[in-house]
Each structure stands twice: as structure tokens, then as C-alpha cells.
Length: 299
Image (tube, rainbow, N blue to C red; front, side, top):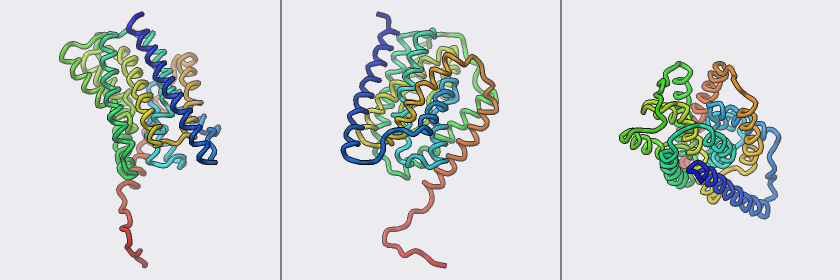
């Protein structure tokens, strides 16, 4: 058995653990509440579209957050957990497809993914305990960063990248530290694809070799962190199911059916929507909260 096969097997196991934990949580929720849990067609459509374009490199966290905020589908404090849990199996599907076909140093890939998992585990533990205001402000900053990364790509500011399939010694140390940080940021709603591509390219790696690393990292972090969000109850189960049920077909459609797609206009639209969502989150998080016991002022 090769390292790649072992990695794929580990992905399948973490995905199975997430499904089992989610099933138990849904059964408990169904016994405790009469609220509907079945995903809506609109929820599945959101999952399909966001994961379709995520596989093409646009990302799913920022776009999904923007949709949730625009239509008020998920409470702000539940958005990070819903993103992680709902997109986990879609990202896992991407990872299984990419790590088996794209060449990269397998040993380094495993080490980088491990660093990302540790960052994601610690990050999920922090995010799951944050207040509504902290989540709003943190997500707004994450969305602004995501929009900045998107703009860099559209303006041709991404580094061209090298041709290596493995990092040199010092570059590998930097890559591990960066992947640890990106794992923690994933749990706050900022995707790792664009920053991974930029940093790894700057360190001399062929940009194509970054894909199995960043997708494998995202898949493991999402499944492991998803377990923590489910345990804490900090996610919207109905919206999460919609993302999953629509997301996996979206990934498969992008991988198998789409060869090329003009994305320039779409990327600009995504940036506008993401910036709008960031502004609304900042406004909600920074506005003055009423003081307990205070008498409202009248004109």
C-alpha cells in the first residue's frame, strides 16, 4: 500500500466518522424538537453551485456565507460550523479525486495535512465557544481577506510558481507553519485554497502540486473540525444537509463534465457579493449593543 492509498483510506475513515456522528446528532435533534430537518431544494441548490465552483478554484466558504447572509438563512453564530460540517463531504470528494491523480511528494503532503488538521482542531475548539459578536467580526475579516485573495488572482498578482514537486528544507518548515495557521482559519470561514496557492508558489512549488495538498488539508480539517462543531451543536443541521446533498454532485459535475469555463465575470461578481456580506457582518458586529436596564431614548 502506498502513502497516497493510505491517505485516501484515512480520508474515507474520517468521512465515515463524520457521517456516523452527524446521524446520531440528527436522531437526538429529531427526538428533542419538532422543527423540520430535511433540506429544502434551495439549500441543495446552494450546495451544488458553491461546491461546483469551489472545485474550479473559486472557493465555497465565502460564497456560501454571502448567500446565507443575503437571504437570512442561517444565524450568524452558526454559519462557521454550518460551512465546515456542510461542505466537509464535498471537499472530501475533491480530495479523493485530486490526491490520486496529481503528482506531489507524498511524505511532505502527509506532514502538511497533519499540520493543518492540528490547526483546525484547535481552531474549531475556539470558534465553537465564541460569542455572536466575535463570530460576526471574525467572519467579516475573513471575508475581506478572501475577497483580497480573489482580487489578487483576477489582477494577475498571483506568483507564477516554480516547477518543483517537493519543498526544500527551509521552505518546508515555512509551509508547515502556514498550513497550521490556515487550518485554524478554515474553522472561521476563510478557505485555504487561494492562500495555499500563493504561499506554496512563492516557495517554489508547481502550482498544480498545491491542489492535492490544499484539498487534502481542507478535507481532513473539515471532517475533524466538523465533529467538534456537531458535538457543540454550533451548526444548522438543515442547511448543512442541503450543502452536503447538493455539494457532492456539484463536485462530480465540475470534475467530470467541465473542461474550461470563462470565470472572469463570475469572479468579479463573487467579490462584490463577498464584500457586501463582509460589510453587513461588520455593521452587525460593531454596532452598539443596548445596555441592560437602560431606558431607550425617544425623539
